[in-house]
Image 1 (cartoon, rainbow, N blue to C red):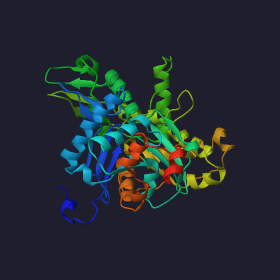
Image 2: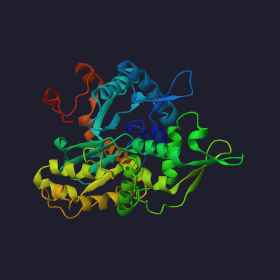
Image 3: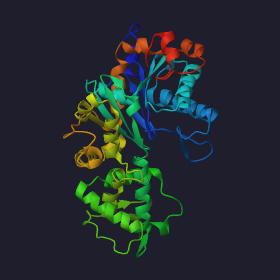
Length: 404
């Protein structure tokens, strides 16, 4: 039982803070500097040894069943609290599907009987950790990267930008490269390719572990050489340029007594997918510049001087440095040079790890009086037709006097 349960009978108990990421969910209590638990955003599939992500639902009925089990695990296995006693603060993306938001509220209100809920934008919560009100926030997570400018505490929703590049894209490249070039040694003489000994695709947990333990973001010069080499190789060019000298190989233990040799080129090349220009000439770096261009002209300089990066993918070694160098290089390109006059980009460093920056901001927000005025109670939820209003629901704003 948390220490808060016995402090005072009269004092109101701290809110529960949830941040549902595509890969991991952060949960804990308001006023605390870090989440109590960071757990996979998945539930076990009955009668199997497999799991299903809570975001991979087929409909509301499927999502409701998963969320009931997921919240039961969070409340009674990890947090060990009575859900009826505490408000809930949910840090969510402004692009969160309405079905997911409404189902979360419905499960919490009807099944767990929480007293009140408030949904807050995760990008805006990142600013609470720094005490600023203007920034360009990049959230690079598992499935996608989303940039959203915030000016004077207001999200400029018309300027958001997103690209399906994140941890999942890196995992797919690692898998392809390892299948082609990695060697596996064991007790029997000789080396085998990874594709020869695997009967099924590599597990996501193994790919994630390989990424976290061995991969990194290289410098821009080496990265561009690797991109040219990778493009020529994948398109079957006759004269494939030589790649730069790779970093050392790494020995990675597989199940049993097998040893996987991860080539240095894979360690360095995997994260390049984040900075390669796709068919639409987009990358994570262009994402930020395009977002700045869509913002009001008088806000652009302030946004470029206040960049906040969060999300688990941004924790890769060298990510922020490479992003800063790419921005300085791209802003000189004629595509952007004639549209903006920006010479420098400055980055903030939140007082926590990037993977739970939004959670910490929600924890700070949960300790303020704003929760009381902005939360939605069970009665309001039912009167509103079991629907959680979003930022565009003007009828709710006029009727309730609240802003989302």
